Length: 310
Image 1: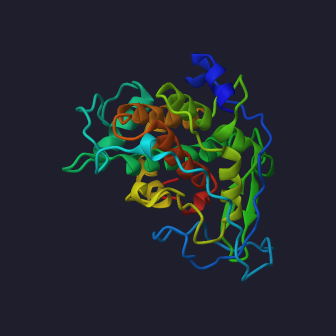
Image 2: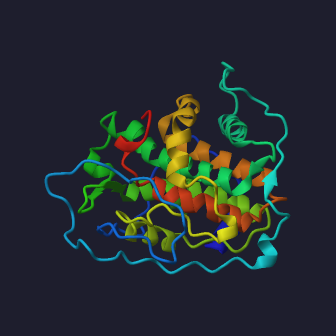
């Protein structure tokens, strides 16, 4: 995968006029029942993944523990070391929410998110990267709803594989959705292709393996481990992906409505790439892209009925 990214022309990691899902999904969701926290899971309590019970819930293996995918290789310490704490001091924002002109949507989103998360110490790198990753992943799902399903170009069953756990929580999977998130097809863009390209340009060469992340996400639906980023303890964000999605999606959607829906995940991915570049002196590119994708993949699966201001 790294060889393909390094060989890609610059145009293949930048925005395009159209994103068309074409790849096959790398995984299929496994329906699982809810389990309690294990000792190896992070200490944060996730937000619920869905609500409402369907007539015929999927799965009947209540009480069984969900398989957890193998942990990815740790990034060498010398590649992620940075002054403690890891805070970035941003420049004054170039754009404001109230400006009427379209402007550069990724830049405006990045500036807005920095303003939202800045405190007296600056901006916590892991937290803002988690937030932009969560928004990018969910924007991929919303791109299909707004750009394909609502206009009648695809039926729901063609756009998504809808999975419900024994507890009634609903999740959304599918080939088209995975293509927007992790496609490596030369003719098309994806969130992964853009942020990984940014990491490589910044000197990163220990990128996470997307197949592993997709399988882990599918294996943890309906469990307390769903949506919890698998990161070292000293690199955990202060806001978990689901909480970041609930908090920031209403504002992010205001920016995205200025663009065609199928471009939404691409704008969010370029905003993520901009934030990675701004913070390259504070956090290693390898780790930055891992944080983004650990949030993007599970948040692309959540039930839209549970997300504010859809």
